[in-house]
Image 1 (cartoon, rainbow, N blue to C red):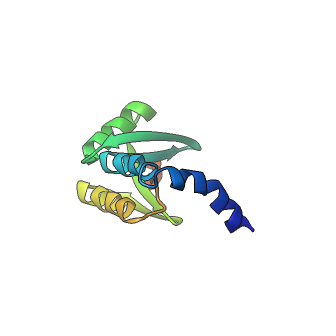
Image 2 (image 1 turned 90 degrees about the vertical axis):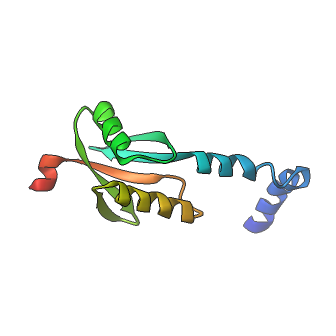
Length: 116
């Protein structure tokens, strides 16, 4: 029943033009990368133009959160410390290859916390 209900809701969109709804999503996916930052329970979403530079993210984190923080890429409850441009490029590549991921999730931790 749910499938039939979804099909009836989608039908007017598809009968109008099937390529138009998809185009904006693909265009934004190519141009910008959405990154969700989480620090001490606070969440922020920031957009970065491609190619995303590791140094740009570090500077933005410092200006937004007021301190230099370690960046951990989060995927399926697994966290990986991002240390370099290469690490970040791999995270962006995973985003591009996944059809259901809309953003990169990054957990921010203080450097004192990670050394302890």
